[in-house]
Image 1: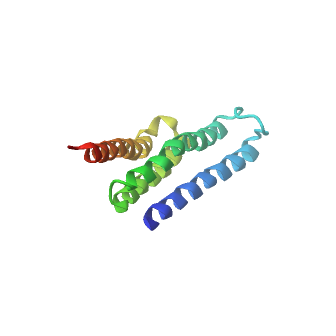
Image 2: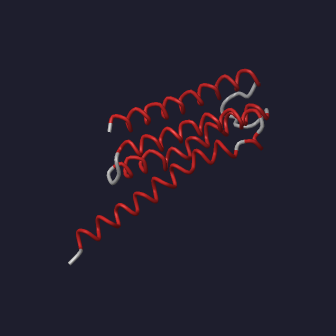
Image 3: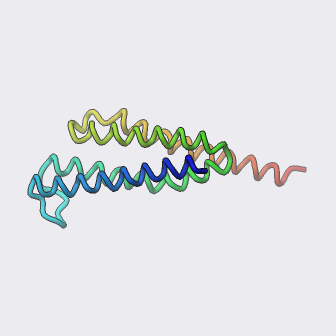
Amino acid sequence: MYLINLILGLVLAQYIYFGVMVGKARGKYGVAAPATTGHEIFERYFRVHMNTLELLVAFVPSMYAFATYYPPQYAAILGAVFFIGRVLFYRSYVQDPKTRSLGFSLSILPIVTFIGGTLLGAAQEWLRAHAG
């Protein structure tokens, strides 16, 4: 499980970093809190941060649930894909939101895999417990 916790720590640190970048963009582009609009580039940083938060709600619990049914190394690899996807999403979205597809895909696919794998693992466990 240490690999999962390592990935989770990296992903959470990444989320904090994105928040710091939002704060810097606020200053650079003159968007005073609590405003969330005002300058297009600031809004891009803000959306990267919020989109990451939206995905973390599904990512964190689904990664742990997945790891209860499959080797933790698989969950860690998928978690690393998520982390890389968020890096690509950040870079592309801030530069040009139209180019965010690869980063978003690499972020959402691990989550879908975690949820599907968790449902399959739980169903298999239920069937074993209730067989014959």
